[in-house]
Image 1 (tube, rainbow, N blue to C red):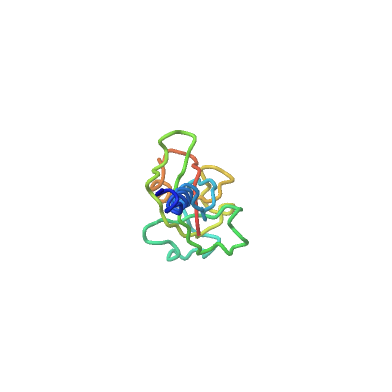
Image 2: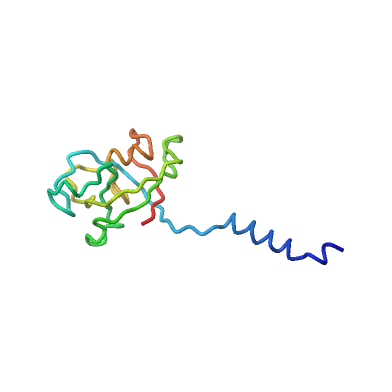
Length: 141
């Protein structure tokens, strides 16, 4: 008798359950490499050292997000999701980085060519083991 009186409970539970399993994601997936000093000059602001955030969480944009220079100054949330070597990622760490350069023309060369984002050594070390050449990332503007 109670099943006929409250069928909406099952329906509500089913909707809630499916919503928690299949939540939408607004992030993109790509790869991250790292690069080390010297960082100047950059494609975005030349020799202006004030372009770098004080926490040193910055990056160079790969061709996929460079957008003819429109990516300069953009900020992204980045987290490591996997790597060739298990245990490389720090999965609990999400960082916010600022794009200050173009990977293709950066003074310092990236640890791996063709990455989506090339992180400063500080930024890369915050989300992954710094000895890795590259990692798979989730990023969101």
